[in-house]
Image 1 (spheres, one colour):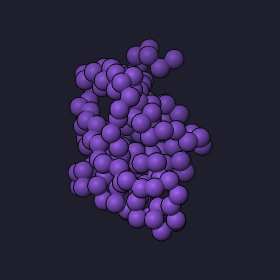
Image 2: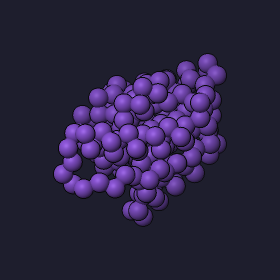
Image 3: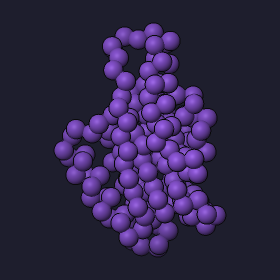
Image 4: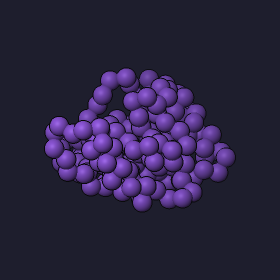
Length: 159
């Protein structure tokens, strides 16, 4: 399985990079995983609704340019579907079973995802009703993907 995580912004925090590298290494026997960073749109703190939409659209265009046409896209969104680790594991297993070998998870910038990205998504996923920094979500997502593979293999990591 080929999994890409398309995300807005550059990861600077060393501890997050180390965590992502660790889980990426652990995922090696199960899947090829790639993190694709697209530049965030520079914007002032106080934006109008129109300006926010313009920022999301610019970031969204960058995201969409990195997604393979045949990829199954799962967008991380606060209003997405909440799932247990076991449900995510089942979903990934079903995708593999039915020939979806390319999966793209999408993490938006600080303003979220554009409508165009959400329309391209085959599914949405929410980890919580809380808001997390998008940099931290990369680590959480990679850990959950690793957990899903361990669950699907019946291995003891997930308890």
